[in-house]
Image (tube, rainbow, N blue to C red; front, side):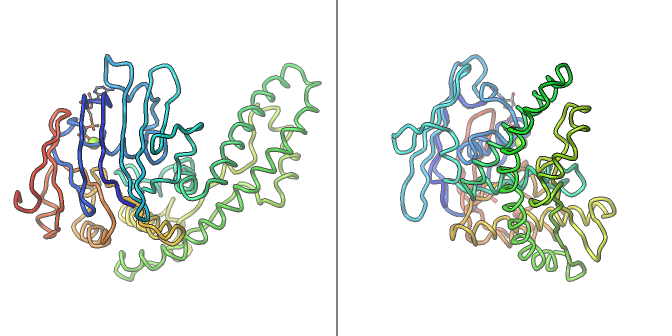
Length: 366
Ligand SMILES: Nc1ncnc2c1ncn2[C@@H]1O[C@H](COP(=O)(O)OP(=O)(O)O)[C@@H](O)[C@H]1O
Ligand SMILES: [Mg+2]
């Protein structure tokens, strides 16, 4: 997978922007608040239809404007895809692939595989379970259209069931209607649990070797899926929790409460890992993500590193830069020292200043 070009119109602080990318490493450098992350955000949008910052479409439109466009040309297995995304203030987004409008935004997901790595991801081990679930979901939704569908359905049912629980609080006679929702919740939930289980198990096989190298042979990282409930016992657990759910007005059982753990020599690194250990695990996890996409799709994902290099020490930087290999990479940074220190080859270098991009020649500038 390669992103050949990107055009932005009234997206964030870009009035208009058109850029062509190299197939190797593309570096965006400049001071803070100039628009570096905004470019990665627009690529993230093309991949997932959402912003990694979790904001609404309207916030992505340039201040004072009514609409924005993101256009990208992607090449996958030798075939060109022209993606056109139209963001509007008070309406849902419109998307066309090769000039053909798609009915639902979710139909775009899975075309552009990307792995996004930001300093916040370095805390995935020590943060709460919701971020680890998000990690599984972002990846699985790109890889598996059924998973995306099941998850969307599941989340809708959870919302409806929670609303019903609030109503039951006032009108206890409505309690019988839970049965219908629970059947559906179990049906979608079980598929999510099974898929996550397989995903973590596949990831586990990759992460061990990577982490061993990254930790200089000192650590053996093991990931374990911690489902809130097993697929088999989900119906019983849900029924047993009914009184509690009605009392709390919340669905307390199901994969929306899942987690997964990181351990080394049976020590749970979420709780007992040093900061350095936790960060190394996060790095191993991200690098495994690249590998699992390769295995499952036979294609290379696009890698985006948002200000993450300066957060890593020299040996981890080295490791990360070494692993990039043959995948198209987009890196934002405020300085170029890391690349100079590691004698890293930059294919294309862009300087970003207040929503304007100038293309510099690569290594010659260094
Ligand atoms: N909707 C918007 N319209 C115009 N400018 C915006 C909008 N959203 C963010 N910005 C501007 O974008 C800049 C931040 O861009 P960002 O890509 O996060 O910077 P950085 O270069 O530090 O990664 C800020 O100057 C901010 O004011
Ligand atoms: Mg930034």
